[in-house]
Length: 157
Image (cartoon, rainbow, N blue to C red; front, top):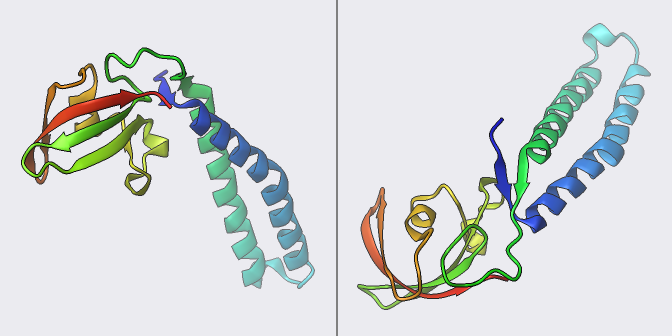
């Protein structure tokens, strides 16, 4: 079984979401189904069919989250030596051609969000960063072309 890398924050967020889905959301859908049953003939009851479909989607989401938690490999990043870039590290990079700085955190695929400056450990940028040290040159081959960066700082937040 493949392990699924996650930060502690992501693990806790997924666990909380699963708890909400299993309690409040399941109960809400059960009430919708019960209400729809009260409208008569189930074979021609669109409201009942919609509620049952919603229930199926909810159960699929629950199974997905349970699977992710079962396969989770929680990687603790607090207190790590900021000598090399590893999973969970936050890095500050400077693009060589423009001098523009960017801040990125390497996280699991589930929590990646570019708007929040979080990139998946599987992304080309993250793969280029893993194992690097401050002042190393980073070469990223991405669909938009090759880019060059200098690693300015490594943080574990």
